[in-house]
Image 1: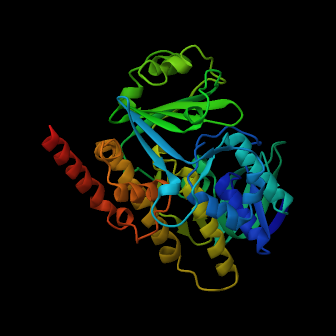
Image 2: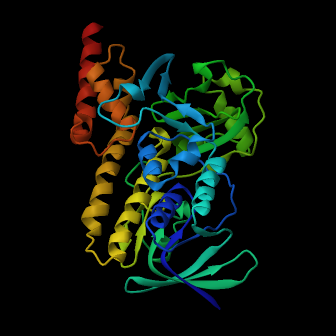
Image 3: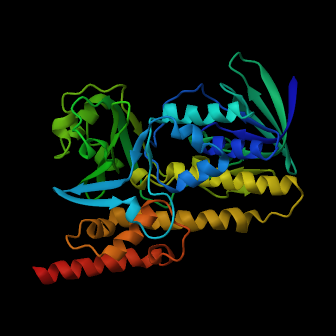
Amino acid sequence: MKKENVDVLVIGAGPSGSVSAAYLNKHGINVKVVEKTKFPRFQVGESLIPRCMDNFEEAGLLDCLMKQGYEKKYGARFIKDGVQGCFDFSKKYGEGWDWTWQVPRDHFDKTLIDEAIRQGVSVDFETEVTKVEFNGTDSLTTVKHQDGSESQIEAKFIIDSSGFGRVIARQLGLEAPSKLAEHGSIFTQVKDVNRPEGVEGTTITFEIIETEVWFWYIPFSNGNTSIGFVGPMEWINKFEGNKTEVLQEMMKTSPYYYEQFKDIPYLFEPYKVENIAKNVTKLYGDGFVLTGNSAEFLDPVFSSGVSFATETGLLSAKLAIKQLNNEEVDWQTEFVDYMKQGVDVFTTYVKEWYTGNLQKIIFHDKPNDEFKEQICAVLAGYVWDKTNPFVRKHSHIVRNVAKLVEMEENMSE
């Protein structure tokens, strides 16, 4: 059986894997990427947040993205019962990028990995990991290629960026139930022939149908738009029919967007994802680390997926280089504890979104500008900035501010 030797094996060629591989290659590490599918391939998670721009830039992948003409995302809009709450990233607390993109992920992900290949990264597509054996920090990975043949890859370290494939988590029995409520999603894309002109037609929008049910509108620069619903499985499963019929019925619950999309055919049969949130019992072990969705996925409401994927991808690459150079790495402190801080902040905001507390703040008719700027920084992904009270005090500040909003509303009534 053919055998290949590398310093680092990256499993998965999505944004997390691309960022890891590109950064490692840039720093002279012999890196190999194996990817189960053939690119381009459909992927959800089409809305980015500004924090990921820092990661693309540091990995040397930003320039290729700048040339693609993706729809720029300058903020986000929330709609509930005709009331709008808007956030402008240029008016956020602290430093950082003021914009990002809304992207068709099939094109976006291929652009990233193609650039990594152009820079010198070795990538094998349609190559599935069938077995991983660890001997200390060294590993022997068996892969199966598209033609049915097998080969092996010896590596000093593995970065598992396999997304929902969760290669190592499944092999080692590391999967765990999420701490978030069981929500599901159903979504597709359309040719947006009724798209309004100007900002109205290009702004990402979240329409709240019920406290725990919301609709997304993500327009792309190619004329297509991603549409989808997220809600408790109980709500999603009450609609009958095939997935196309189900989404068509769901669209009738959208006061704001139903007319725009009621007669528009879907570009593909809608996808249905049950119990979106994912978790694991540990993020690293001897010879491996889990990044992106292969480690944890929260909820699509604040578009944190690609940001966490690139954050973990970049950080894991940096720490892997230290380890390969025989420098001491405290994976618990330098990786797990760091990432946990950001995940905990976003988890609070996801939970408080579904309790309705964050929605009370967003739709308050007299918002506190300072609070809004600080919340905007969180929504932009700057969840490690502890100078921001809405980061530092995240466990209780949203709930407390929501109570103040409720008191103000009761007094005005």
